[in-house]
Amino acid sequence: MNSEKVIVIEDNDTMRLGIAETLRREKYEVLEFENGPSAIKEMQLRNAAIAIIDLKMEPMNGIEVLEKLKELNPKIEVLMISAYGTVDDAVKAMKLGAEDFLTKPFSPDELRVRIKKLWKKVHDERMLQSLIEQNQFLNEEFFTGYEEMVGSSDSIKKVFTLADQVAGKISSVLIQGESGTGKELIARAIHKKSQRSENSFIKINCGALNDNLLESELFGHEKGSFTGAVKQKKGRFELADKGTLFLDEIGDISQAMQVKLLRVLQEGEFERVGGEETIKTDVRIISATNRDLQKLILEGKFREDLFYRLSVIPINLPPLRERKEDIPVLINHFLKKTAEKNHQEVKEINSEGIKLLVSYPWPGNIRELENLIERLVVISPSEKIEAELIVRHISGNLKIINGFEGVPLEEAVNAFEKNLIIQAMKKSDGVKNRAAKILGISTSVLYYKLEKFELI
Ligand SMILES: Nc1ncnc2c1ncn2[C@@H]1O[C@H](COP(=O)(O)OP(=O)(O)OP(=O)(O)O)[C@@H](O)[C@H]1O
Ligand SMILES: [Mg+2]
Image (cartoon, rainbow, N blue to C red; front, side):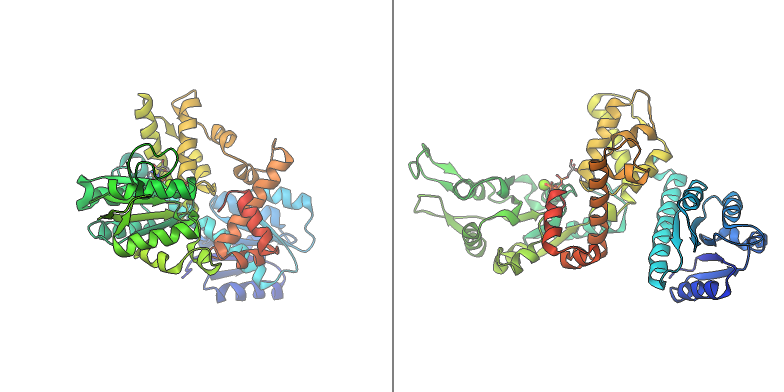
C-alpha cells in the first residue's frame, strides 16, 4: 500500500478536506495545510513525495509556495490546482518544476488518476536513483545464466526461471510478446540449456512463406513433386530430428497449414510433399508470435486444438515499458557489445541520459533500444554520450515529453497519438475493446491505428 506522504496546501476548507478524503481512501498518508508558511514550517514535508498546491492563497501564493518547497525538497512532485488557471500560470508553474496542473472543479476520479501518475513517476525515479547509486548497472554483470540475455526485473527473472524449468522437457513452448522483446533469444536459450543442445536448432519463419513453400520447407519434397523440385529435399522437421524446431510467427499461418501442422504434432509423423514414405520425427517444438492467439481463436482464424498443442508451456515476454528496471542493465550490455563489435573502448551515458532512456516508452522494445545504443556509440564524438544527442536521435515520443521544439506537426501528433494508444493498451491489459473505450474510438479504428503505428 501507499504509506507515502502527500501534502495538500489549500485555503478552502471544503476543497482541502475533499482532496484529503479522496487520497486517504487510496491509502495515502495525507498532511493538510491551510497556507504555505505553515506547510513550509513543517519539517515532515521534507520527505513527502507529492504536494498538491492551490494557486490562489494568502499570504504566499501557490507559485511562491511551489518555489520554496522545491528548494527544500527538489524531488517532490507537485500538482497545482486552481479555479482561475491561465495558460501563463500553468507555464510558470511547470517551469518551476510542477509536474501537472488541474483546473477546479475536478472529480475525485480525475484527482486519483493524476496522483497515480505522479506516484508512478516517484516510484520510477526512486528505482532509477537506487540503481544509479548502487552503480549496479555499470559495474556488475547480472548473472542470468543466459549468456546473451540480461535483465533484473521481476518479470524477466520469472521468464528465466520458467525457461530453466522447461528446458529439459519435451513439452512444446509458445512464446508470446510484442516485436523485439526477445522471443527468439529465449527460444535459442531454451534449446541451449536442453539435452537436445548437441543437435540442431532449426528456425523457420512461418509468416514469410506462402503455403506451398512453407509446406515444402517444413516437410521436404520428393524429386519431381512439383515444377522446380529437381531433387529430393529434406524438410525442417527432418533436419531438426532430435533437436528443436522453432516456428517463428506462428500466428500468421493459414488454416490449411494449421491442419497439416496439427497432424505432425499429434502423430509425430509426416510425408514429404509428393512422397509416400511416412517419416517419424522426434522434435521439440518452440513457437513464437507477436499476435494475440486467443483473439485469433475467438475470430475463428486460429485452431484451438493447435493452440493447445503448441502452448503446453506458455511464456509471455512483457514489453520493455513494463519492465523499466531492465533498461539501465540493457544499456550497459549494449554499450559493451557495441564496443566489442567495433573494437573500441566502452562509451558511457551519464545519468541524465539514462533517465531519458528510461522514460521513453520503447514501442520497438529491446530491438529499438539496441539499435539506438549502437547508433549513439557510433555517432557520439566523445567517450561520454550526451543526453542532448539522445534527444536528437530518439523518435517522436520523447520530443513530446520535452515539449515539441523543432518537431514537424505531423510527427508530433503521431508520436502523441501513439503514446496515448500505448498507455490505453497498458491500462486495459491489452484488451482492445476496453482500450478503444478509454480512447473514445471504435475498436476498428483502434485496430487501424495499432497497425499504422506497428503496435501489433
Ligand atoms: N534480455 C535481453 N538481453 C539482451 N538482449 C536482448 C534481450 N532480449 C532481446 N535482446 C536483443 O533484442 C533483439 C530482439 O530480440 P529478438 O529477435 O529475440 O526479439 P523477437 O521478440 O523475436 O522480435 P520479433 O517479434 O520482431 O521477431 C535482438 O538483437 C536480441 O539480441
Ligand atoms: Mg523474432
